[in-house]
Image 1 (cartoon, rainbow, N blue to C red):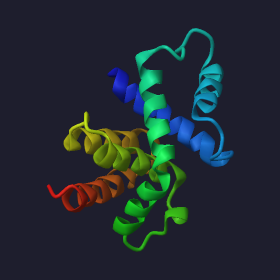
Image 2 (image 1 turned 90 degrees about the horizontal axis):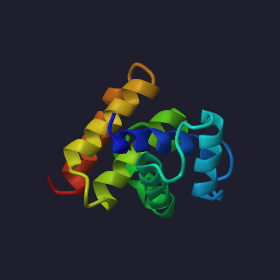
Image 3 (image 1 turned 120 degrees about the horizontal axis):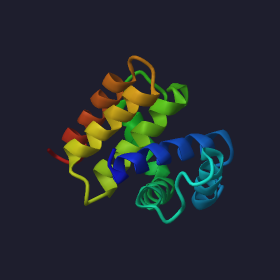
Length: 143
């Protein structure tokens, strides 16, 4: 698994943790707490995966209202708060990378989010994530 793929996985776990707790929590604190529970010697805050996860978290939290608005626009018949928490946070990562990150090709952003859906979501998470992110890519980015 690449450092960025692992970073997305870590960011997903931290977003999940933040959503259970308080969105006002510091993303770095959430990451450090997550790393502590992973066990000694697993990853530290200087690891490339962790640095990338922090970059994702900060960007997502900074743009969360815009990201959530985009998700809501394309998630027909689904209110954001009724989505599975894992799916909602995978979509946040995917939309952030599609719309706010210049160094991730759209197909990579979508594929990585779909893979997160396969690993952490329910049986229908991957197609759900794929459908929404594909629509965002085609309509928001003018692909």
